[in-house]
Length: 113
Length: 113
Image (cartoon, rainbow over all chains, first blue to last red; front, top):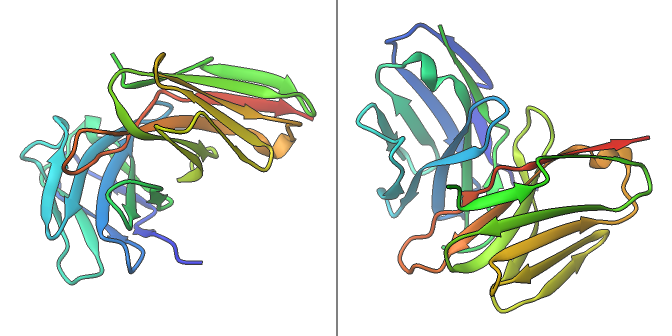
Protein backbone atom coordinates (compact mmCIF):
# COMPACT_ATOMS: atom_id res chain seq x y z
CA UNK A 1 0.00 0.00 0.00
CA UNK A 2 1.39 3.44 -0.87
CA UNK A 3 2.65 5.43 2.07
CA UNK A 4 4.18 8.75 2.96
CA UNK A 5 7.80 8.36 4.01
CA UNK A 6 9.80 10.78 6.11
CA UNK A 7 13.49 11.10 6.86
CA UNK A 8 15.23 11.33 9.19
CA UNK A 9 13.20 9.64 11.88
CA UNK A 10 15.14 11.52 14.53
CA UNK A 11 17.52 14.46 14.28
CA UNK A 12 19.43 16.15 17.05
CA UNK A 13 20.85 19.58 16.30
CA UNK A 14 22.39 22.54 18.03
CA UNK A 15 20.45 25.76 18.41
CA UNK A 16 21.06 28.05 15.46
CA UNK A 17 21.77 25.24 13.00
CA UNK A 18 19.83 24.65 9.82
CA UNK A 19 17.70 21.54 9.53
CA UNK A 20 16.05 19.97 6.50
CA UNK A 21 13.31 17.41 6.99
CA UNK A 22 12.39 15.32 3.99
CA UNK A 23 9.16 13.74 2.90
CA UNK A 24 8.14 11.62 -0.05
CA UNK A 25 4.36 11.96 -0.46
CA UNK A 26 2.23 9.34 -2.15
CA UNK A 27 2.93 9.60 -5.87
CA UNK A 28 -0.46 10.63 -7.25
CA UNK A 29 -1.21 13.10 -4.45
CA UNK A 30 -1.36 16.78 -5.24
CA UNK A 31 -1.74 18.50 -1.87
CA UNK A 32 1.04 18.45 0.67
CA UNK A 33 1.20 19.53 4.29
CA UNK A 34 3.53 19.90 7.23
CA UNK A 35 2.25 19.65 10.78
CA UNK A 36 4.12 19.64 14.04
CA UNK A 37 3.35 18.15 17.42
CA UNK A 38 5.18 19.23 20.54
CA UNK A 39 5.40 16.28 22.91
CA UNK A 40 2.01 15.44 24.36
CA UNK A 41 0.28 18.37 22.72
CA UNK A 42 -2.01 18.93 19.79
CA UNK A 43 -1.14 18.55 16.14
CA UNK A 44 -0.51 22.03 14.74
CA UNK A 45 -0.80 23.04 11.10
CA UNK A 46 2.30 24.65 9.64
CA UNK A 47 1.85 24.93 5.89
CA UNK A 48 0.02 23.56 2.87
CA UNK A 49 1.48 23.34 -0.62
CA UNK A 50 -0.17 22.89 -4.00
CA UNK A 51 0.92 23.42 -7.57
CA UNK A 52 4.46 24.26 -6.47
CA UNK A 53 3.51 27.04 -4.15
CA UNK A 54 2.40 27.62 -0.60
CA UNK A 55 -1.38 27.76 -0.44
CA UNK A 56 -1.73 28.51 3.25
CA UNK A 57 0.53 28.91 6.26
CA UNK A 58 0.06 29.40 9.96
CA UNK A 59 1.55 32.03 12.23
CA UNK A 60 4.07 29.42 13.37
CA UNK A 61 5.49 29.27 9.84
CA UNK A 62 7.60 32.41 10.02
CA UNK A 63 10.61 33.52 7.97
CA UNK A 64 12.74 30.79 9.55
CA UNK A 65 10.69 28.12 7.79
CA UNK A 66 10.53 27.27 4.11
CA UNK A 67 9.21 24.41 2.01
CA UNK A 68 10.25 23.13 -1.35
CA UNK A 69 9.36 20.40 -3.81
CA UNK A 70 12.68 20.29 -5.64
CA UNK A 71 12.30 17.29 -7.89
CA UNK A 72 8.64 16.30 -8.19
CA UNK A 73 8.84 13.62 -5.53
CA UNK A 74 10.47 15.05 -2.41
CA UNK A 75 8.77 17.65 -0.26
CA UNK A 76 11.10 19.33 2.22
CA UNK A 77 10.75 21.51 5.26
CA UNK A 78 13.73 23.70 6.10
CA UNK A 79 14.26 25.49 9.38
CA UNK A 80 17.05 28.03 8.86
CA UNK A 81 18.15 28.73 12.40
CA UNK A 82 16.66 26.33 14.90
CA UNK A 83 15.47 27.41 18.32
CA UNK A 84 14.90 25.31 21.41
CA UNK A 85 11.15 25.66 20.96
CA UNK A 86 11.36 24.04 17.51
CA UNK A 87 11.85 20.70 19.25
CA UNK A 88 8.85 18.63 18.20
CA UNK A 89 7.63 15.85 15.94
CA UNK A 90 7.16 17.08 12.41
CA UNK A 91 4.62 15.25 10.28
CA UNK A 92 4.27 15.38 6.54
CA UNK A 93 0.90 14.57 5.00
CA UNK A 94 -0.57 14.42 1.54
CA UNK A 95 -3.88 13.87 -0.18
CA UNK A 96 -5.32 13.61 -3.67
CA UNK A 97 -8.07 16.16 -3.37
CA UNK A 98 -8.57 19.52 -1.76
CA UNK A 99 -10.82 17.81 0.77
CA UNK A 100 -10.68 14.31 2.12
CA UNK A 101 -8.46 11.92 3.96
CA UNK A 102 -4.93 12.96 4.86
CA UNK A 103 -2.18 10.37 4.70
CA UNK A 104 0.54 10.96 7.26
CA UNK A 105 4.12 9.87 7.49
CA UNK A 106 5.57 8.46 10.70
CA UNK A 107 7.15 11.78 11.55
CA UNK A 108 10.59 13.23 12.12
CA UNK A 109 11.50 13.94 15.70
CA UNK A 110 13.60 17.09 15.97
CA UNK A 111 15.54 17.77 19.15
CA UNK A 112 17.23 21.16 19.44
CA UNK A 113 19.90 21.44 22.13
CA UNK B 1 -9.68 28.94 21.60
CA UNK B 2 -9.14 25.79 19.55
CA UNK B 3 -11.08 24.97 16.38
CA UNK B 4 -11.54 21.42 17.54
CA UNK B 5 -11.72 20.44 21.14
CA UNK B 6 -12.24 16.91 22.28
CA UNK B 7 -13.56 15.72 25.55
CA UNK B 8 -12.73 13.99 27.65
CA UNK B 9 -9.01 14.68 27.49
CA UNK B 10 -8.39 11.21 28.86
CA UNK B 11 -10.56 8.12 29.14
CA UNK B 12 -9.83 4.80 30.79
CA UNK B 13 -12.15 1.84 30.27
CA UNK B 14 -12.17 -1.92 30.58
CA UNK B 15 -11.82 -4.12 27.54
CA UNK B 16 -15.24 -4.86 26.07
CA UNK B 17 -16.77 -1.56 27.13
CA UNK B 18 -17.73 1.16 24.71
CA UNK B 19 -15.73 4.37 24.45
CA UNK B 20 -17.29 7.68 23.47
CA UNK B 21 -15.28 10.76 22.57
CA UNK B 22 -16.75 14.13 21.73
CA UNK B 23 -15.50 16.96 19.56
CA UNK B 24 -16.70 20.54 19.30
CA UNK B 25 -15.68 23.03 16.66
CA UNK B 26 -16.35 26.65 15.80
CA UNK B 27 -16.45 27.35 12.08
CA UNK B 28 -18.50 25.86 9.24
CA UNK B 29 -17.07 22.69 7.80
CA UNK B 30 -17.00 20.69 4.60
CA UNK B 31 -16.30 17.52 6.53
CA UNK B 32 -15.03 16.27 9.86
CA UNK B 33 -12.51 13.50 10.22
CA UNK B 34 -11.30 11.31 13.05
CA UNK B 35 -7.74 10.12 13.35
CA UNK B 36 -5.93 7.78 15.66
CA UNK B 37 -2.35 8.13 16.89
CA UNK B 38 -0.41 5.47 18.69
CA UNK B 39 2.24 6.84 21.00
CA UNK B 40 5.14 8.30 19.03
CA UNK B 41 3.65 7.35 15.68
CA UNK B 42 1.95 9.10 12.78
CA UNK B 43 -1.76 9.77 12.53
CA UNK B 44 -4.00 7.24 10.86
CA UNK B 45 -7.28 8.23 9.28
CA UNK B 46 -10.28 6.42 10.72
CA UNK B 47 -13.42 7.90 9.25
CA UNK B 48 -14.71 10.99 7.45
CA UNK B 49 -18.21 12.39 7.76
CA UNK B 50 -19.45 15.09 5.42
CA UNK B 51 -21.41 18.10 6.59
CA UNK B 52 -24.63 16.75 5.04
CA UNK B 53 -24.33 13.42 6.86
CA UNK B 54 -25.53 12.78 10.38
CA UNK B 55 -24.11 9.37 11.13
CA UNK B 56 -21.55 7.02 9.68
CA UNK B 57 -20.33 3.54 10.59
CA UNK B 58 -17.11 1.71 9.92
CA UNK B 59 -16.62 -1.61 11.66
CA UNK B 60 -16.71 -0.95 15.41
CA UNK B 61 -16.66 2.81 14.85
CA UNK B 62 -19.72 5.02 14.80
CA UNK B 63 -19.45 8.73 14.16
CA UNK B 64 -22.21 11.29 14.51
CA UNK B 65 -22.24 14.88 13.39
CA UNK B 66 -24.54 17.67 14.53
CA UNK B 67 -23.76 20.77 12.49
CA UNK B 68 -26.32 22.86 14.36
CA UNK B 69 -24.39 22.25 17.58
CA UNK B 70 -21.03 22.11 15.83
CA UNK B 71 -20.21 18.84 17.49
CA UNK B 72 -19.29 15.27 16.64
CA UNK B 73 -18.86 12.08 18.58
CA UNK B 74 -16.82 8.96 17.99
CA UNK B 75 -18.04 5.73 19.52
CA UNK B 76 -15.82 2.67 19.65
CA UNK B 77 -17.85 -0.40 20.54
CA UNK B 78 -16.54 -3.51 22.27
CA UNK B 79 -13.16 -1.92 22.89
CA UNK B 80 -9.93 -3.90 22.79
CA UNK B 81 -6.58 -3.29 24.42
CA UNK B 82 -5.24 -2.53 20.93
CA UNK B 83 -7.57 0.48 20.74
CA UNK B 84 -5.37 2.23 23.30
CA UNK B 85 -4.24 5.40 21.52
CA UNK B 86 -4.97 9.10 21.18
CA UNK B 87 -7.92 10.07 19.04
CA UNK B 88 -8.20 13.40 17.27
CA UNK B 89 -11.02 15.06 15.43
CA UNK B 90 -10.07 17.25 12.51
CA UNK B 91 -12.14 19.79 10.63
CA UNK B 92 -11.94 20.50 6.92
CA UNK B 93 -13.34 24.02 6.55
CA UNK B 94 -15.92 25.19 4.10
CA UNK B 95 -14.17 28.43 3.28
CA UNK B 96 -13.46 27.91 -0.38
CA UNK B 97 -9.99 28.02 -1.86
CA UNK B 98 -7.37 25.81 -0.35
CA UNK B 99 -8.38 23.83 2.65
CA UNK B 100 -6.34 23.11 5.71
CA UNK B 101 -7.34 20.39 8.11
CA UNK B 102 -7.24 21.62 11.70
CA UNK B 103 -6.83 19.13 14.51
CA UNK B 104 -8.38 19.17 17.94
CA UNK B 105 -6.68 18.64 21.25
CA UNK B 106 -7.24 14.88 21.33
CA UNK B 107 -8.60 12.26 23.68
CA UNK B 108 -6.16 9.79 25.16
CA UNK B 109 -7.91 6.43 25.43
CA UNK B 110 -6.63 3.62 27.59
CA UNK B 111 -8.31 0.23 27.32
CA UNK B 112 -7.43 -2.02 30.21
CA UNK B 113 -7.29 -5.74 29.40
